[in-house]
Structures are given as C-alpha cells and as structure tokens.
Image (cartoon, rainbow, N blue to C red; front, side, top):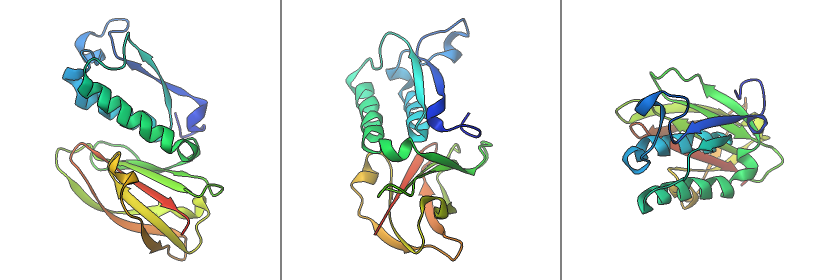
Length: 186
C-alpha cells in the first residue's frame, strides 16, 4: 500500500484475536507464545511508519511481550518525523533475499532511515545501495546501524556518497531479523 501513496495515508490490520474465522493461523493470540511473529509485525509496520488497527483486547499478555511492544513503540516515537516521511523501496519483497525501504526527508537533520528485513533462516551479508539524493545528501553523511533499540546507541561513522549521491554500505542482517540504518547531517 505504500507504492502509490504515502505511508501515513493508509493503515494495516493486525488480528491479535481471531477475526471472521481463519482459526489459529489467522491470529497472534496468545501473544507471548507467538512473540517472534508479533515482533515481526511490529517491526514491519512501525518500521514502515504505517499505523494499524490492532484487533484484540490487549497489546501484551506478559512482561516479555510488553517489553517487545515498548521497544518498537519507543523506536517509532523517537524517529516519528523520518518514519512519517516519504518512502523509497530498496528491493521488492520476494522472500528469497532481503527486502527493505528508505525513509527520506531532506528537511530533517535525521534525513534518512532504512529498514532492511531478512526473511531467510540464516544471516546474510549484502552490499546495499541507499539513494540518499532523495534525502538531500550531496557529499558526506553520518550513519548508524544496528537493531532496535541498539541503533540509537551506536556511534555514527562518516561516509561519502558517490557522484550519483548513492551510499553503498555493507550490512549483515540476522536470520529472520532486521537492521536499521539512520543517516544524518555531519
């Protein structure tokens, strides 16, 4: 739904409890027993800056589940401005390799935020091209990368973009996990 409209113009649906049938395959309850799947939904939606209709009586059922929800909500709140900005697809999701997108806004100090997902059962290493021209980057940029919330604690490293204003960066994405890269002005 983000291909033809801004991510904030739509919403998704997350059936925490059964919705119009579908049985166990169509629900996430009990949340703690499906915490990995639940966290993936939080990462997908909040990492894309997409809001959701959460159908169910609760957002967490244990302290461990509450910790997961809090981690992603805190991430979204910290980076709301860039997460609510324009979105550039980096690679089409096909389940055979990483997929991801790049949020861009040249008016913000935190001008770009990439979220990369690995659907595979093993960690992967890739060289990813980030088109930072859409973020207004002309020459140099500071980049932090890591998981959530670790990316906010990582030190930034300075990089130069190429003449097409593309940053090529080597990344390691954990198995069935995600990686966040945040670019800001030097």
